[in-house]
Length: 281
Image 1 (cartoon, rainbow, N blue to C red):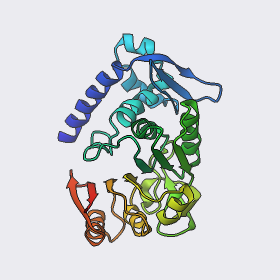
Image 2: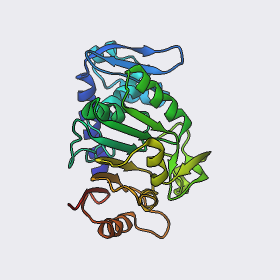
Image 3: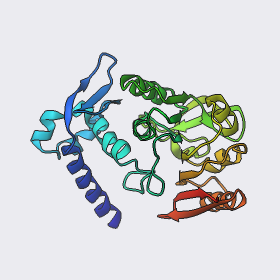
Image 4: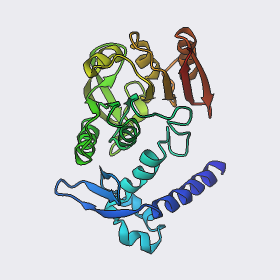
């Protein structure tokens, strides 16, 4: 019952935030991608809404539905939850809760999805900074690159790989029509399977030309500790990690906590599944 009440409350709050979006243009482009362009702001591309989304869409005021067509409903949700709020999960803590990226910073996000928070990071670090977006799923990469190009972003490098502790080719499990659910180790994340290249963070950072990192976000659906174990050359100064899933026989929070202690980080756990860490000076 409590989960249902919280879900309804979150949906109401989300609806109110969507209603506040200052939309300049919206629709579906020639590629079949939904988009929303904000007044004096970025343009966001994403997937079109599914028929199941209609029930939620019709909770929006008529005035909002006149500005945002049904096809762009999922893009509107992502603008609110990923760009403006940057949640580590829907309704969860924000990625920048304990470190706010600044001008000139080097920032990395793995599990970059379609680039909504990447656009935010690029704004924060500015022309003097750099952002690295790491994303393995082909459809997500396509839209991620489209969002970067459409907004004339010059300070972002896209790495089309999964993150592991070594170079390999591995199979991701993904739920049908859910491009944020892919996982290397959680078998019940769906029946669709994709073989993609994976690599260690050491090699990915070399590929991106990084010598240091100020802020790193990790959302990898169960392999966060594997990513950390493949990072030996660079120690990011600040990290935000969503450790929402345990590998079979391993507690993710405990494993990451042990790594943090060994590698000189002070860290704290928020809402049982989210870790913020700062490198000891």
